[in-house]
Image 1 (cartoon, rainbow, N blue to C red):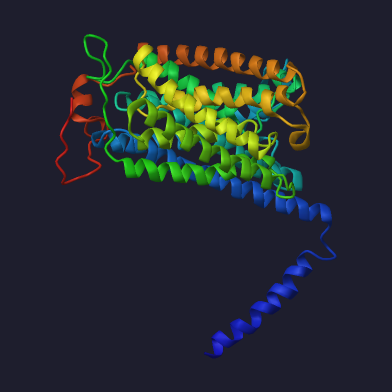
Image 2 (tube, one colour):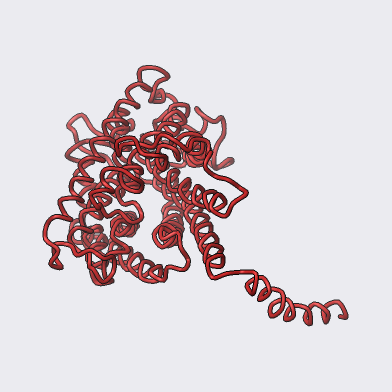
Length: 445
């Protein structure tokens, strides 16, 4: 009891004595701001890192039990491999001294981060924040290529997207690149992160081909249900939570009070996307499908990521709702018209809705929020055309580069697992274990 009494007496002295001294005479408003911004940026980075768990849960839940270990390994390894590749090469290409506005040519291996200076220490925090974004772009692809991709091939892909494909786009828009010079709006990465992952996923899924039994001889599409929708739902809620770090954290400044607006627009767009997707699928198929409603929430989040700091809450509702409708229509189109097998709807959620979100900034931006007016608020068509230019250019680069990359992988180490491995499950074939040991798992193929 005496020890507890001393602790109780000491805590107020510490809170009202030691802490104010640290922020008192020796501290300045500038150094305090640097400290707050650093803590905020790192906290946001940690939230975005937690989104890796969300992606792992969504992708695992939407696929079959016999491939759950494989999905988990891909999400683990694309972050692990991607972190090192981004540290060695990607960060320099993205933020190094610009070569013709196309790519960076300095700062490799974080050579510009000096631990002896405040600016150098900030570079460490900024790298951490950017690294988790790079990993997000990489992990999007695993869902679209799930249940039939060789693990070694996926590792090779993870290196190249985080070291080259993603950083080039980041340089164009978030650094000293040519799209940044045009004034393109992509505050938190509807295009830089999500469309990069979505378009790379499209290239990979096309070259990989569909899962066994996905399409009949007459071209009809067969539904292959995921094994654990509650797990997928948990993943979506984790992603929704982490997205507050993704969007609001992109201020990289805790002293920037616009983080409050960004949090509100992010949340409203996600809610509207989920509701709009539910209503759309309810009308189309007669049932309020949970899997499509979950993807609707993600569609709203992806769509608001570009304009989150530039639009009003009312506009965010519209942007998210359009994303929710769009994802339902896109999933149907890609599956039944294009005959591209995307088990989790990654191309639709991240590629298509990422493009929509980027374009929406040119329509709904308001000067009161981000300093620019879009087409619907008297700003003319110029901002929309800039957004459209960015969407087209990024699609051309990412889809083209990823198609070449996956083609090389396919011709060398191979891209697709054998039919036998797919039938037994990639958990056994690729990793020699089961996700649910002791349970009998039946193939539905």
